Length: 235
Image 1 (cartoon, rainbow, N blue to C red):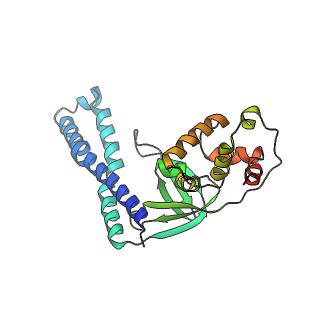
Image 2 (image 1 turned 90 degrees about the vertical axis):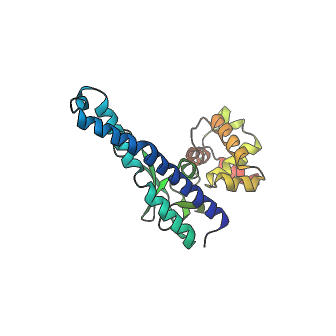
Image 3 (image 1 turned 60 degrees about the vertical axis):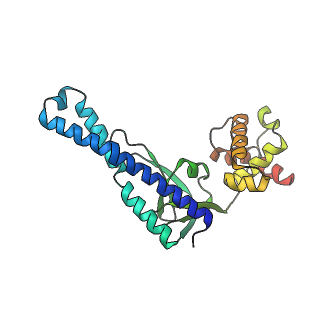
């Protein structure tokens, strides 16, 4: 059964597909048809000017967006049926190149034999290698929620703390512990009684202090310097 948060997530996903449909039907397909007609009327322009490259570009966009109407209908049926499925396992995030010259690279989540396209928001919530439970809509395959199912921390022999790590505040160390457990920004916000926007701001400041670029590196750094045991000991 869909929860209210999951229903909102599904509606947001369907709205994105509706936007892609608009771009496809109002811009890409008319442009593709116009350029194809120009190529038929003046075949020499297909290779002599920029018409050929533009035609390829619009064709690539059309291939990228062509599934949007189907996904929109699938999401609508998912919302009407209110059925949710879940899968649990170790998270493995891989990149997949898009089709064509301009189609973007996609991040794909592999978990227990299932594959899901990852939007940037969901990608930021995942630390590869940890165990998560993913709830998703069965027809559209839209991710509705991702939650940490299990965390296994193997403490290595800590290294000497460099200066920028020694200067961490208590709040920084608390945030490190929560990030290392694989909690999402929403979960951290609930535990710290903050807004998700404030948590994301704290995250960015922490990354600068630690000299890292993404949340997946927090756990590795915390294990290396023994920050997990210290943070847990502080309560």
